[in-house]
Length: 282
Image 1: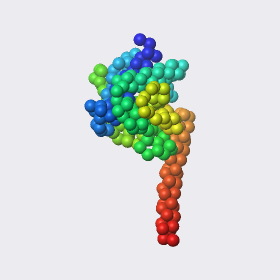
Image 2: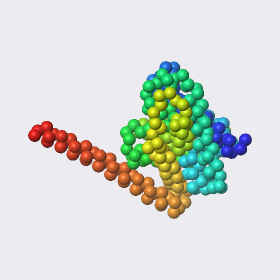
Image 3: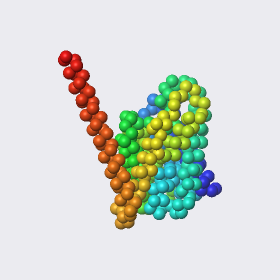
Image 4: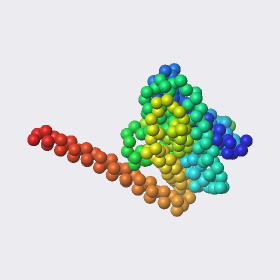
């Protein structure tokens, strides 16, 4: 099997079990799993990643995530760079196909579900509180932790065949601890591929595909992933590069923008409340 096909199949498995399948079971009406909680989703995600890594890890390394591919390439863990576009293309196609498989798996349930947001949630992420700078930060932090965790795992010796299970537990931990803000895409392919599937599939009663948010789960994971890799290399390997400083300034800038945005919203809310109180008194 080629590396291209391996990344495609591995990412498809990830979506069937995790990104789409378990979410569909929880949110779509008249599913046997309807109403199961966030813990079920995070476990499904973790097991989906585990199965994907078991399936193709020995062939392609099972990146299954453009953020992982770019992060590893940025520190020389994935030479040559010429393979990066091929890996990312395979991941996007695999995620797209995985979304289509989930659509057919739950075919009778789309017409039973009126909630357009729930239907979209099967395919892509959406923030609990929409605030683009803060949402971007959430995805950055989640993917930063993902890449750091993968590098920690890679630095240790485990019983043969255990690594994919450890990686799956890492995904569960990220989901439970950090996923409540944005649904933790932490993977551009996981969000974009199925979002495209949602846009083109004849899903009964669907709404729009929320393209206004789509850039967040693309750039957040990429920025956070690359920074996680160069941060690890600078701290644990002692290789402080120009890219580390560039990414540090980028991340710091985004954090400041997010903080200023939230403070402004808070001050505006207080101001509006005070104005409303004055009008009532008058």
